[in-house]
Length: 353
Length: 281
Image 1 (cartoon, rainbow over the protein chains, first blue to last red):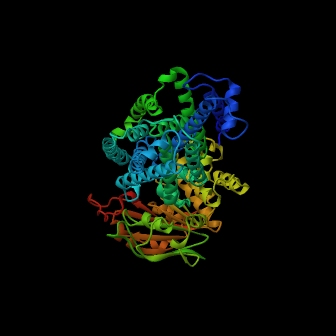
Image 2: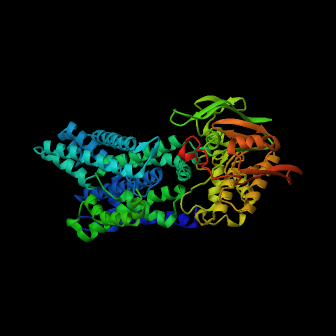
Image 3: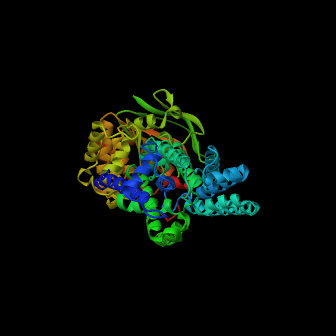
């Protein structure tokens, strides 16, 4: 590991902590004093007595919001970095290869089947298991989408990148179409359409401790596979056969990496809806800083993704306040142009189809 | 001592035509074996199968009295190291990181480097004459240096069987000799070394055993002077070559050498049967 990476991790950690604390103080509504925010946050996790009146609720909403943002940012960035490693292309990301839209469709389907009750749970407080069921459905949707994409794009065990991107587009379109149909069917149910709408544009508002737990546990599961895929992804860069000759179980490593990427992205989408481009931008930026070795890159992406999304939300809320955009919208606004630049820089590669 | 053995081996891609058909071959420790033969003979395919990278269609490859297919990948990689014709690595990988890849089979997941790992990498870098370039990035290396990095990585693997595919294709004559000196060195240390090469002369002056392959079969095996006879060569390559003899430094005795030499009218070489396009020569 390079010196840069060793220094970067504590810096990112401190930065994340500072941003989390700042996000408790500054929010959509008035700023709180630092001590008030701290006392409220402590009370939210069962330490000390709650604040008076609506203050406690405000701090708790901000706390779950920022913890969700950190978990979702970390999950999306790690997912993107894993997928880019597996497919050996910087353009792979949960959004591009269908994970996000598959998860979104799974979540929408679950909400539709569970009906109004589940849709309530997305909002304020409701059934304890609904978020888990929705997450599971999102994961199944993500797994199905990525499975279809990989099967369609692979020939003789090799995944060709142009084919992957094209099938990703196709699967995204299918998922989007079905989801639009679901939305059309549920137009009469205000709660339902609001819930599904939330998924489409992403939302970090009105989160609960359960949802924080869902995204962080999925992330923890994803982190568990890192020791078994990092060196393997480095060696796979030399080609399938080469990695096998060195003793890598290439099939298992790929499956673990893609499975983990799908799981954590699905949990992120299930909890916060579609937030595009985090999985694309963060690994790309960090790769430039810390190199391509996955042993360094993957852990740094976890921290970097959390800092990125929490930071972007903090900036949005502190500058725009009440008129802050939904995170998915905001990310698309900055991510779209970024993606175009990325495509232009890879133009040569694309021209050689 | 026989270390690895192929018995009645049939190999094919996609299961249609046999690229290797009914081949028997044994590699012994302490010997440098060279596998030669015309384009499309199935040499690289055979090498891949011996490395455990291609499952036989029928027949068996035995390692320690066990079928190679029964070995776990790591277990296999500790016994068999491959030097491919060319390699790739993540952009920005340093030479020593690349060579460290050879230690994969010996390391536990996410564990720090052991003293044995570091020693093996250093020794491999020194054997490949790359010690002073270890912090450089692989993409900065010249073609010959890349070849050496691949060789060093295989040495770091510390395997008793070394399979080398066409190591001299991109090298100037001095480096060609250097590579074969290193291969002979490995054989002299007790390893079983098999090198696929087009260079009959390098094979002749260095190899303890030569295996001549054509159309998926072994045509001749034995000492260079037996295998490189005028009759055998004419049957394989046609009449256009000269054959002579010169003292080999490795063996201290004369070995045959061959020169492509046009004797008559220009004629197109017979096209070899089409094998795996990715298999190269």
